[in-house]
Amino acid sequence: MMLILLLFVPVVAGIVMFIPGSWPRRQLLPAVGMLHTLLSGMTLNAVRTGKAPSALGGLLQPDALGVIFLMLASLLFLAASFYAVGYLREEDKLHVKRDFNGGRPFTNAPETRFLACLCFFIAAMTLVTTTPNLGALWVGIELTTLSSAPLIYFHRHQASMEATWKYLMICSVGIALALLGNILMNVAFFHTNADLHGMDQVSAFIAAAKEVQGTDNTIWLKAAFIFLLVGYGTKMGLAPMHTWLPDAHSQAPSLEAALSSGALLNCAFLGILRGHQIMIAGGLGDFSGGLLIFFGLLSMATAAVFIVGQGDYKRLLAYSSVEHVGILALSIGIGGTALFGGMLHSVCHSLTKGMLFLVAGNILTRYHSLSSYDVRGLREDMPLSGALWTAGFLAIVGSPPFGLFVSEFTILKGIFASGRIFVALGYLAALATIFVGMSVPVLRMVQGRPPRDVPKSYSESLYTVLPPAVLCLMVLGLGFCVPDWLADTLNRAAALLGA
Image (tube, rainbow, N blue to C red):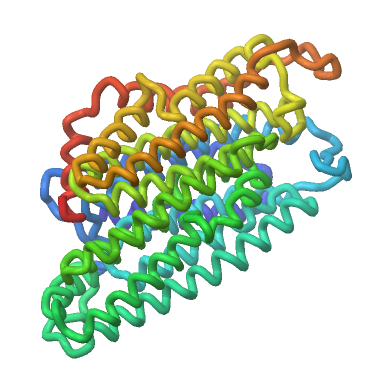
């Protein structure tokens, strides 16, 4: 019952959003967020204590890997739901909305559709993170694309329309390639004795992979993982398949960008992790791990190149996401100690990037510009958002005492323990370059005096400041101590990946 409610509560809420009238539908969103977070916490506790919850004939049966990403998605949805109340109030105050790039007037999409798609978005991510069925996981990833595209196009202007089409086209191609990966995996296991007809395909494919070790079928398994990596890697934002991400995250409303960067990328990553689990069982962990290391380093290098000199602060955060998904891929490819660091990194990155995009929305609302050159004196003009922006920058670049410092250092220890010195050097070089590249625009925005054309009277809304502040405290706390329940869950997840 718990898992059924977890999946269908946001679906029903999304349908209810379409009921006509002037009833308080905005306030329904935080209520859904709180209920979903409560159910996610109960699911996490059940998985951690070995109760193995299941529903719909095994279609919903989360494990330690999936429940981590479920909890992250739920927490970010909760933060975004409260933020949405203040964000939409600010939108109501703008009688004439103008494109930040060309200054042309535009209109917003219907608020009803926006709120409904937010609910459908979290429902789709819930399916992805709770199912052991690779087909259902694929369907869930496709549903995240369909439900998030209208969110990107909430502001109806040319730039957001281009970003939405780019997102739809590139991610749809990626999802099609991932479907081919699923098909090839079924081909690889066609003649095995494993029962492939149950809902729990992950367990069945792991059992079947042990049978094909050393046979000619491993070539099909390798091909399947390549298609899964490229397909889901496109949705995850791994370079060079990342080209949709900077446009989509910079043009989407900030609360949607927070959900996409902090939660959606994890869902695509989970698809790759499922493939990697099966490859390890088939004795091909070195093959899949080598590909993950290559694409991880490539993503970090690509992000470093585009972050240096980047003037658009939301695109800056988007390229930072490319960097961090590269770190995640690298940690899984390295294995060993780095696996725990990678799982911790996924938690810290999601919370931090969610916080930063929400704060970026506050800055955009105040200054009506995406350029870091137009924003000055945040510490005086917006003291709360300015402090969170500074803290978020320190966290995202891995500075102590934030949680990302612990996770990145743990991954570095794992790289050295594996004996890959050149990988460690590339990892450190990318981190150093990105630190310098991000510090310039962030410090430029925080310091100095506010521009003269910015109205002096401005008060920051509690709805738009409190959610990122809570996320910031979480990341800060993880830098000092990882709670036992979280460490246990992360260790269980790492064990599923061979640690």
